[in-house]
Image 1 (tube, rainbow over the protein chains, first blue to last red):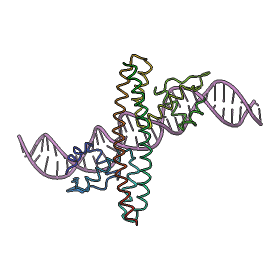
Image 2: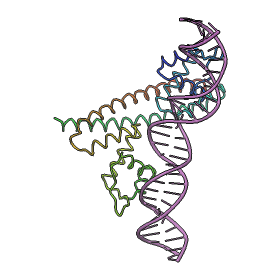
Image 3: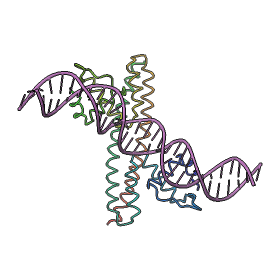
Image 4: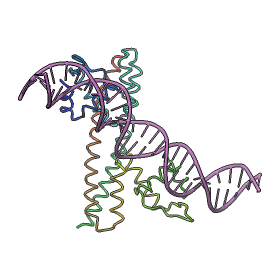
Length: 116
Length: 116
DNA sequence: TATTGAGCTGGAGTGAACTTTAAGGAGTAT
DNA sequence: ATACTCCTTAAAGTTCACTCCAGCTCAATA
């Protein structure tokens, strides 16, 4: 798969894909004659990173995690605690969003009353 | 209430409070001799904006909404549709976060197996 | 063979949301 | 008086996450 294909499949710019690789949040992509040729594992890495970014994780955290992963089994405990930390943060974030959704629902129903 | 009090109460810098006011995402704060003296309504506006920001709404959207509000009752329908749009966006965001939390839970349990 | 098109790199530029700095004014404690 | 702490502003600086650009290689096509 070329960078163009991946870009279209996941709806992300080619520049961003290169940037992610440079930033080390996806491991170096397989190449043929210097040109990126995304294998299944590369594609999977892209998909995971996009999911993480959409959830709001900063590049820096993802990069630290990917670096540890590259170091192998020795880093499993450290990675586990990172994942647990991220989970906590995400749960808090989710709760904030839920709080605001409720607030919005309340506001919206007040507005609707006014309009009738 | 001085800017310092508000800053400490809501754990946000004084600079940020001034910036929010300048950006128009909180209406002009009541002043005494040119110095901000937050009334209940001002404090409430701050609290709402912080909640919106934590939920990830951009300054620009909040500012458009606050501007409409200043214009009064005429803009109610427009504001309602903004709120509804924001709610949709937040629900989508919440789902993305939930998706990633599930993925994390799965990963975490796999890690724990490995460590045992 | 010339040119078109897709890919490559390093580096500069952008927009959002602060954050810091500089320069000053007012009120109070020593 | 003067030092301290608080407040004010405009403007410059910072960080993050891209985004764009110049200048290059390489392969296919008119």
